[in-house]
Length: 246
Image (tube, rainbow, N blue to C red; front, side):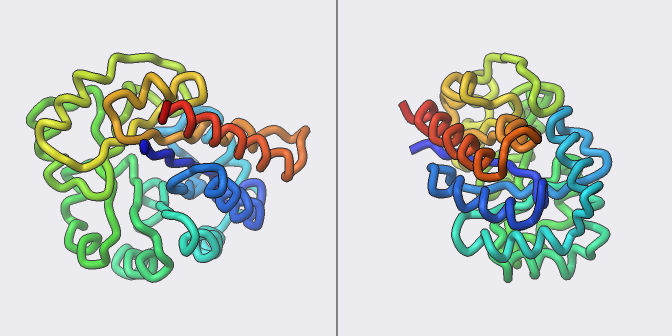
């Protein structure tokens, strides 16, 4: 059974909604929730997630809200934090990673922390049994892939193309997947540009997909109720989970 990871922007449109949505997605077949930490300059994210980040911050999102959402969600579904390094660094990683473990967070996804810099935190992550998710991009050389996957835990986040999330770019992922599998048995999840139309193709040869912009697009619709947003996200999750497992 191939896995579906769903990204949602924490605290948007409000904290209780994020909790309700995460739990509804679990019931709709989502295997793990990626709680996005709103940030003012989300450089790896496309316009939809960037907009949701800015709206969440404008509505008063604080890091404590991430912790409160996590405490409600993590005991019930595999939960990760996705955020930019400064969001975590300013809360003192030496204290934050043990707290993440206590809450039940299984991993962090930090797109602007290069592998070469992340190794300095390996002992901290490993001793707390929290995974620092590794990224592999289409531009990585064979040598770099081998180096990165050696340290990989939980799953490898394979970037489906060079660019930002939410773009509709299509690339042949098979050569890259084959390259990664030469060096590791860690599961590979494909992210960037995955939706109900692309999921079936992108999951070929991979172990799962990460979907963000397709869910956030629904959250940004101000013309529908919270209940309708949750229903539409749940329906989307069911469609994608079915597509990747046909």
